Length: 236
Length: 236
DNA sequence: ACGGATTTGTCCGTATGTATC
DNA sequence: TGATACATACGGACAAATCCG
Image (cartoon, rainbow over all chains, first blue to last red):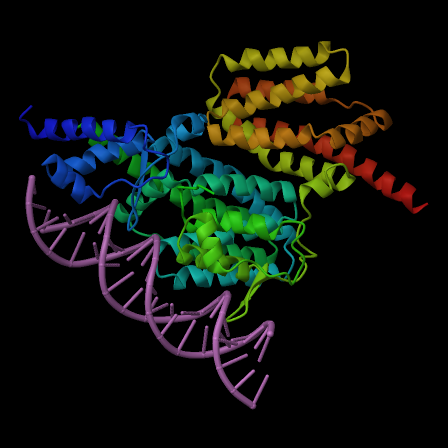
């Protein structure tokens, strides 16, 4: 009970009780971490550890600059995906799914892209470079990949891509990817984007497929090494 | 009205859906940014970031002091699925989407399929042969392809396949496929199925991919010739 | 022609979570 | 553990442009 470890355990217990109160409707905002720390007479680190657990359980979600909020009730998220969305396994599933679909989309797009979409794709690449914050850059990256899906001219393929893209912007996954970004370099994503664009301009389906494959494979290895390090850290 | 998880990506998704609504004729004015922010429960910055993307895509245009308006008619954008589900174009879109996704699923499944799913796939093939009516044969065929998607072990890929499969069972398409079946022979689908199963048993990803590709390509040519004949008949 | 009202575009201060020491 | 620097979000305020009476 005196161990520092038990401090966060106690905090977790109290915080969980606070969140489970009946008047805590989904979306209501919780006190700040600093308030909790003062109220429970402990440090902010202990509070954060406890909140991390609650977030992993899906009871709350946090957003930098905004606050901590109680999440939707479990009854609303029975989908299996929700149980793994914020886990490394979810991250790897997502990138694998993208690796399965998007190179094929690039191949089709190269064969069919109407000439007017190529400048739009180039504009997306430029905007990624110009973006000042991560949220904007992510949004433009997403828009770029969507343009490629749309260039296939197949509404079903576009709809499939939109589903994939929705998972990509899952809040839990966004946190994970932010962590990965902070621990590993940004990589050469922009070079990859330009290579994809060049293949589309040339109408070379095989090259576009390969370029997209390489682009996503690079992401895959980054995430894979991150997850492995994570697992090793947990073993210790 | 209550969407706790806010990020500009989610806003983009909803705004795009709002703009694509059928009653959004080109030139109609959209709500103000502040209204959108209040409606989506997020800040104006997130809304503006999403609108920037929509503007780059040409769906909307903005003018300071005036407002935000939906852009020129997107004639060359893929038509929504609802307007083409029962048309030959819808049939071809569907088979193309399957041709894009399912060979990749077969490749992954060959590498990962747990041994206990192989008998289930074999059983599906047998049931197709035993089926007396087209409806139940279709159901077992669908179950077979789903087993392969499930064998990838990736819940996201399974979800993607389920979306595709839902479109496949669209009532309008079923009629069309019934017509195709009546005018052309059944083909060698069962031989293809066995070839896919053999590749999965051998754990040969490349062979499984090729087998699935050939299987769906055969369907594709059948549908394509049917649609061409249909078009020629309409010309006369 | 004028002026008030409204809307987009831009900036800043404050509050909050994140990361590091 | 505690403290500090940092990135981001939100809301308000203001300017510029437009619309309407």
